[in-house]
Image (cartoon, rainbow, N blue to C red):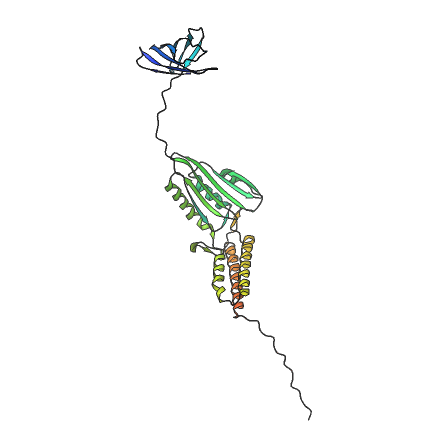
Length: 335
């Protein structure tokens, strides 16, 4: 049922629409008055349907503090009941809220070597701006701990596969501010996210400068030049291919270089990981610090030398020495 009233309180006019079972919508023309807090209405049916009779309507109700009108109604046919009218002011169109921009920034590091104390140092630095910091360690199983619990944790293994440091806090300007630092076998990265672009970029720059000291220079990546060791080998091979005379030699060189690249990757994965994460304090001697770098560059130099030697051999610059000719004593004839 819907009622619409217009005019002055003493002379109200309007319409009533209600859904009658088996008939449909029945419309009444209303007249009445409102003398606070009482509303009085009289109505005559506008809808005329053959075979159906609709009597004149009388209704009286009282308005409460919420603006609702509760009362009784009856018709000249003897039907009646209770009713409740709720105020409808009509929703005003308001300006749609502006969508808040979410900014995300990332920085990828090279090979990392880090221990437990250094992880705690990074987490404590984050904790100065965030209410809580969570450290997740993957070492056989994945375990997540708050920073305070991580400090007291005694790991059963010496090294971890992956470590993730995560913090989040509400931001009055929009979405939550989030920082995340992750070290692992596939990628070492720092990420910041928030509604304030200046904060996102500034916080990421802090990570970039503070975590740089944990990076190790391996032969597999020349980040400053934007290339890596594999690309250098492939580029050198492409340069050498036109100097080879036949398709067979070119296929041999390219296949050998691809095999060398696979071998270099396998050796680095096994002996020189992208992230060396120590769950206990590591030794800080010069030999320990340089061992990964020396091993990486040794592998790279040997791989480059093998590729260069093969290219030189296929070009004919390197030849296998011919077997020495057998020297026989001169035959002597008897005098």
